[in-house]
Image (cartoon, rainbow, N blue to C red; front, side, top):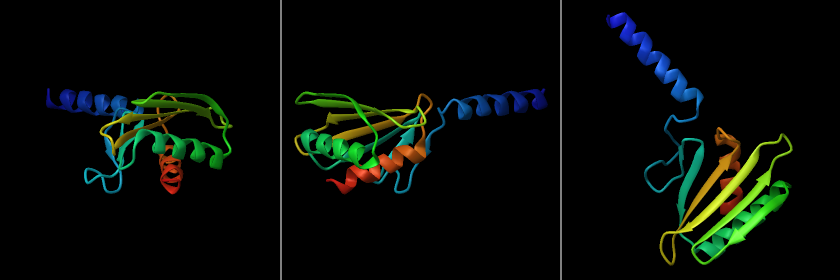
Length: 127
């Protein structure tokens, strides 16, 4: 009975890990750092939505990937792009307060942490 339970739990763990639903905390996680969860990289940025939006647009340009979609209002922004390997990029910025925004980056359907962190680094260069 114990053997079957262990196999079941291991199988469940592998399915969760393969689907990108495993919680991974990046460097500095929890202390204001970026957190990678379910294929999305999230970080609170000490800048208003408009400033983070412009930094994200500049990051996309720096990476040499095309800007496919660019939507904005006073509370949120949404950018879409695509890498040459076909992986789609979604960047969302949401107002947390007048001076703080939440930046969310997703690359590909299941997520790509390396490329997401690369985009985040480029965004931060422009802030």
